[in-house]
Image 1 (cartoon, rainbow, N blue to C red):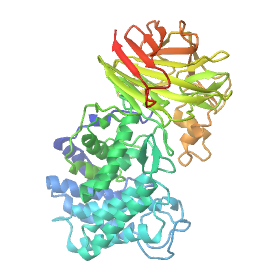
Image 2 (spheres, helix red, strand yellow):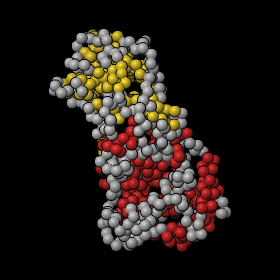
Image 3 (cartoon, helix red, strand yellow):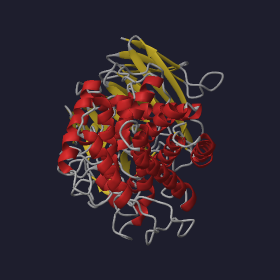
Image 4 (cartoon, rainbow, N blue to C red):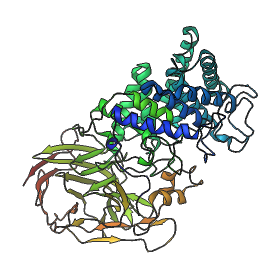
Length: 610
């Protein structure tokens, strides 16, 4: 079973002027064939996300005309624009819309569903989208739209902006991408107003960003992020927010958008493995955006000097939104317009700067969560998620059913590169059920092909083992498919276990159920509204790799040693020295310093290739 939206890396999409002209030429032919006598360009099967879609296709026709001067397009643009102005502008309050701050304002807004009261909760983002479609057309209107339509469109944009900032609560869905998009709409609108009117709009947009978005960012993995549907990051909407930040910086030149975009880009770079797979988020777990992410990934990838385009997108939406039949849908058209107009080139090589929450070399990646426990491991094209045991999730030693991975104190990290090897040593103080403080030292070493994880902890009573991950998915060329197999070996006995119990709170990797579906099944609210991250935390048990202690460890330590990416035997040796624990494998020799660290408490690590 292939994951439905983890498709190809977005930087594989051609981004030459010729490629974009071909995209627009296809849009033109589809649109002209679809254009109704009334001027409607909506996809005929669309029933939601619809209030801005005809206007979005109109903006693409305007861009196509500016680039190719197709004589068929001016009349189509004027005709379709007249349709939106006449048929898709609503000024009577939508029955049931819960977020109004002014009743009967008569300000225009766009509907998510055209039928009155059918699904009013989506009217706010639909109005943001309609504002963005409108200002794009204004940017492209010269020589194309007559003065009367242009004046009417400016007034509509002003009305949309006032409805979003005066008649309804700002950002009522707590969706960072929508909120930043609204700010972008205000910044773009301001340029089309007289200075005495445009400057207050610009100032209001900047104030909304500063006071209502930036001031409420959420900390994750050491980075402040614009919150998304109540969480710090969503793998679908986070890259869309990055695109909005790119556009905000492009049109305003305000440095805070670049600073926040750089931070979000570095965060995404750290959590994203070499192969571009990602999962997790408070709205979706595995749904990836497509072309909506390209602008931000390309723009900020170039700024931070890293290959963010490796992000696997939904390439069914590789160029623009489409309906079930593959036909163009105008939703998100504003992002394609910006993407085509931006000349930034893809940065295609990884950053060489070490990142606290990432270890990456060659085809091997480890992404770490806030607690410096792996959130995703990649080796030999296979992706491993944190496994679950007794409602505890992570990688780490387990004794008597208790996972020793949650820190009780500061987590220390040491990065080191030596002789073509990359390593990260994580020293974590933990407390078990016996309330005894122990130090877990986890050493991650990679040569770019295989990954060695060695974990040392003060000797434990009982029958400890290392919870070493849940094999979940593997690269299959241009797709990602589900798997329950793994090329993993251990110095001690290794087993791949599966939950003995059934039910939604037990995840068996041999099933075809995806992590996203399982997470939604455990969430408190229905799919699309529940928080899958929160739901997944309710998982009781999962398929898991379990490694027993390695033989030959010092008497006062339990040492676990696992290698990912190769099934060849693993037989490390260990030696306890005054300076710490020496580990010798077939590939390297490492010295892990004592848990107390150096004179500042920082971890000591030595590494050399054998």
